[in-house]
Length: 167
Length: 167
Image (cartoon, rainbow over the protein chains, first blue to last red):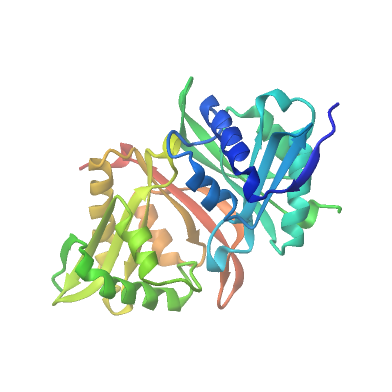
């Protein structure tokens, strides 16, 4: 198994982050974007988040996550997050490591829970991982995602608080 | 009953819109904002929406709504919307008229459904209105909203497509 180094993103990482975001976007079956994936999006949604962490392996960016408030003001105590793992780095447990790292950071930052707003129903790997980490389905949006192979598919809203968290 | 005139918002309406948004925000029990309610917010979230419609009564702005895509790209076919009715104009069926107007506009604009992401569980008037207009609960987020009287209360995700819509 590869060694992965986790660290906070800096401005110098922006081109590699954009490249990773584009490669996962092009797969088309997990992220909603079909256009507008540019350095502005990295600036606002990634560097603008509460935290933005990268995983490197042999000087290659292989995964990243961001987390931040899901809603403003009176909803700001619940975090949301986005996770990306490069195709060539999957199947090695990196997603789980990334999520465990993120949950600890979000808890330490004062959030009370984490929510995902749009987990595509066909993304079985993510659903299985999220469940194993204590997330449960709190919503199902019909036909929420225009999947490139399957047409309109449902998306789940998933949620967990820290009650099930040991560390 | 008052006569209400519905029309599309123009830049000249921005100060009145900000004033209405602030007055409803200050009530604290429906909208999440606790700060940042300023002309930038009106510009981005209201004038930046797919549509933004105002209700006037005797030259007074008494209600408004905006609608637009709830998600980018592969989620862009589902609309979301925000409705505000000034306190002094409530109880006259204006909310229902506004929503019926909005649903027609969203359908005509090509959206396939409408979704509300955060309907506060204590907002019984809104929940009752939404249900009567064909919305159903598709999610429940625990402790999603820091209510000024009740502390953390749940919020519902509500959804309807056009199948139940006659006109």
